Amino acid sequence: MRILLTGATGFVGKHLYARMSGEHELHLLVRPSTDYSALSPRHVCCFEGDVERLADYLRSHQVEGIIHLASLYLASHRPDQVADLVNANILLGTSLLEAAKLAGVRWFLNTGTIWQNYQSPECSDEYHPVNLYAATKQAFITMARYYQETSPIRFSTLKLCDTYGPGDTRRKILALFREIAQSGETLAMSPGEQRMDLLHINDVVAGFQVLANRLADPSAPLLPEYVLSSGHPLRLRELAHLYEQVNGVRLHIEWGGRPYREREVMEPYKGNVLPGWSPRVDLETGMKWEGL
Image (cartoon, rainbow, N blue to C red):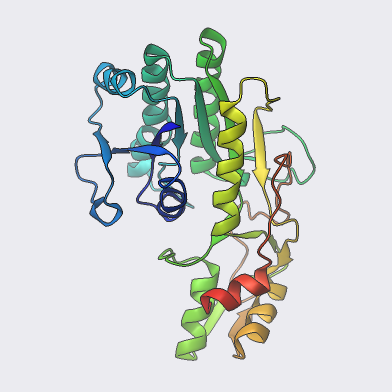
């Protein structure tokens, strides 16, 4: 298939590009300032906001589908970052859909987050954003509804839980554990009763492949959204203990040394399981593989 991929220089995007570039003709959508040299792509579309020019590119290259990973993630935001969140998480995607409609692109795979469903642990479509980032992700889905109702495009959102794996430079929980294991410093953390759902990047990429194939098949049943989950969330305290066991280290953590964050997610959203996909890398194995 001929697929336009956004966010290819991010953690998930790099792995997805590496997996799919040998099977499909991938076109990368990039900003003028994006350094994509490490990927050595064959097809690049530089987007500066001109929707008609983007539509011409999609049409001339006969792009069949779009996988939209690009986003701006902020766990909490400052007032001066509101415009950046809206531009990255709503305006860009809407521009893509407008161009896709003009060019006759057949399907669109959107990336969401389980943080769109705060305090909604059961399979439910109730929307309660954890933060403004999650709110902008939901707002884009609302914008997409218009394009679904006015064009033949098949649209679905894949909501992600926490992800981890090789090449992850984000300062997420496993990276913090590694830092204090090496330094011996004490880390002040919340009481640690919140459950965390961590999924290895290999399983994440496989999920995108499964949903892309489903979207590309016009006869395949399709739900508005699916969730990728390990199926085995752990309390933060349990996660720290598992890390110690796997790596043979001692983590110096002051449990309760800081309060829970505002709107802390205590129980991850479950949502609709993606048919034809299941996680294969358990957390202990994933940690061993990467030396996390």
